[in-house]
Length: 252
Length: 257
Image (tube, rainbow over all chains, first blue to last red; front, side, top):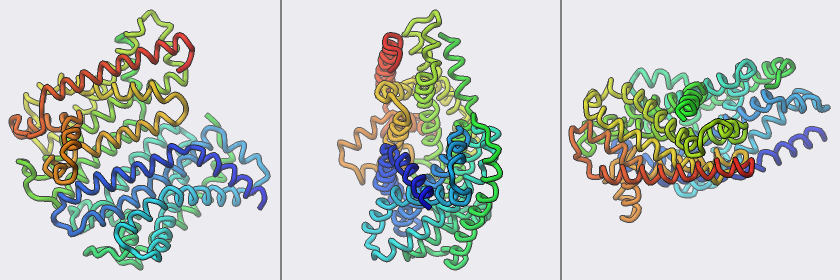
């Protein structure tokens, strides 16, 4: 346990040494929410109060970005040989995986927390919603981190190709989902794809817990089930793939 | 100088993750976000049949900006990995090294925007016209000018991640307050007049409006101002050339930035 805490403390310090990135995430939120969101919502005439809808979508985008950043950072560390050092420390593989997960969640809370509070406060939502929203966002970030880490086997063949695949997948996942628009406004071909996208269920679940009244939100029960299932399965997959892959890691 | 330009340009198109990111972002922005928003917005936006027609030029100009701005990343890596030091040992002057990078940025932006224009032309056939071809030199100057902003960043961000944070920040600051995604009438309803003027002068606004003028069949845009676009691009280009000259001079004299 002592090794676990020491390693977590060390990695947290390293993560938050990069102050400009954390500030950038907040800066990005500010511009997107108070400039892009405000202006686009004035153009949207077929959905009432699109600004609130957009605000929740932006929180999901930020959660996705922060979680994929955490996942990619882990894979990058492995690729560059940093993880070989950590593997040589007297810490069990399971604990190491848990430590990485906790690190990602803390990074998420710090970066997503202030924007979430701003969105809830500006929309006059009760404090209890903060807890439920945070739970949804963290569950989603576990799934996203799991996806990024599970794809790590590609990185050990070519980090360039891994980055290209992750970037393209991210763009597709974010656009083909209900993050920016409800299913009812998508052409059939797009909405069929969006129904297979876990981010669609995460976004609709977040809107459900925030009691945002949008027609045709997906059922909260099935959304919660899918978000949890993706989180658990990606975690399990990551736990299965990572130790096997890491033991044979070659640094660049 | 042209050899350095060629190497730098080919490095941009050979960076798979970068091209993957840019294409993924721009194509999905155009073909997914643009098409879905079309159904959520008014049927006519400032003389355009629908939002997609209005938005496609904005995405093309954003792509041009991101592609030309990438020269800053290449120079940053070149400075940290010793490639720039190697260039300085070649029989070329400092000015030539600086202009080689700006030239490759200009070409990269225009080629990439050309690819996006061809894709957009499938759904917006008005883009297939001689006016679009006539715009190429203007887009080239704009692309080189936008690279000048990256050069200024190279001048001020010396170590580690800082360049990438500043670059992402600048991209956000340039794209959101522009007419890339929304018409000037909407911007006027939210920002005070002084800021509206700044947004109108934003080179990305001017570039997007130039392409919109092609779709509309004439310079009917209330924002487009050719002298403003050319002067702003040239001013940024000069600033970029001076910045890169300073960067490479310092690198030659001190050995680092």
